[in-house]
Image (cartoon, rainbow, N blue to C red; front, side):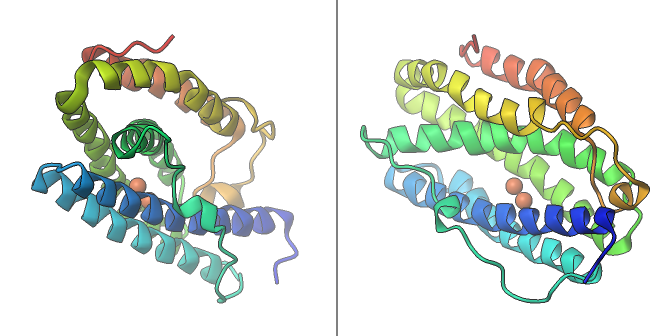
Length: 227
Ligand SMILES: [Fe+2]
Ligand SMILES: [Fe+2]
């Protein structure tokens, strides 16, 4: 096993990505099921099904990076809670609104510029090809989130707007902790950069720019204000 601390951080980061991508597949599958229950347009459901599959591929490609960098080629412990979003007591439509907002309008929209920055310095071939595929797919996943929100707004415009404005501040606090503020280690080695990692300052800068330049305007165009 690796004894180089930078390589250890690379392995730990890509193991986290395996878990996150696998969890994203479960979240997308749950969203697809809820969309079927809400009678969503077939073309939107079909993109959702594609996403379920994409995320499984992303998990496998991330696992390939772990193995390529000297990590163990063994199944990883799975947190089953990460594969499903909580069900809202108000019902299926409310659950769907919450998951589309958190995991797609926010999660996938932040993911695109973050993966773009990660890919920019990646030279290790297996990591590079994983990020090529992930970045190509995440743009589709981001569009899916906003398209799904538009369908939800057609179903119940004022209900969805009210729920979104109430829920977004807490959702954004989670993303702020994950991307915007908590990553204090600012130095990063060439080994880490060559394997698709960026430092805490970059996370924070990209998070803020994405929030201000992409997320806020997209919500505003739909009559949803983030406080
Ligand atoms: Fe993914
Ligand atoms: Fe995704």
